[in-house]
Amino acid sequence: MRKKVIAGNWKMHNLVSESLALVRALKPLVADVKEVEIVVCPVYTSLYAVASELGGSNIKLGAQDCFWEEKGAFTGEVSAWMLKDVGAEFVIIGHSERRQYFCETDEWVNKKVKSAIRAGLTPIVCVGEKLEEREANRTFEVVRAQLDNGLGDLSPEEAGRIIIAYEPVWAIGTGRTATPQQAQEVHAFIRGWFREKFGDSLADALRIQYGGSVKPDNARDLLSQEDIDGALVGGASLKADAFAEIVKSAL
Ligand code: PGA
Image (cartoon, rainbow, N blue to C red):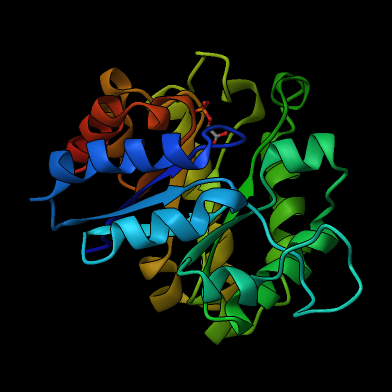
């Protein structure tokens, strides 16, 4: 059985005080949840404070991006090792907003994933098609290229360390979620790709999250699909009660 993983992607929201208030509100709401892995991903500036606040709880810390070098003259960047140093265990890589606004490529995703693993983090690698690609029936082709170029050359050891998030770009922040069937179909495709590359046992263990307008009222249907092993939640993760409800619908 794959343990479901629900991660909150806070994006560029919350000052330190707001981040702390959010996790303080969240902790008691999910304190008795043992069967689901719970992750919050604040902005860089809140990571250290949130890590202290989470200490001893069942909520884990993630970041929203990293650079692939360990250190050096890369003004403005933060390495996976630095994230690990402040208490992060996860890092989102290749989010569609980074691909769209910051020109992030699959080649960058590949380097970042490898560096995150070397630093001891669990990468949450995002893939997903744009609306025009879905409408042109190119979903599988686009996702396959993202997987081939982003993850195709991982070693089996590396492949065993990652989480994949399927996030159709047209469903992110739009309130327009994929139907459970639409999502399941792509999740099964992703697991099939992984099986071909890395074999049965790694494919059976791989966790694939769905992301894109996950809310308390649609989470259960999505999470009950065979190949959906969790959710990457944006907007609804900014409200403690909504995020807690989503966590509980994974039980
Ligand atoms: P959303 O964002 O839940 O607000 O659609 C999901 C994401 O971008 O990870």
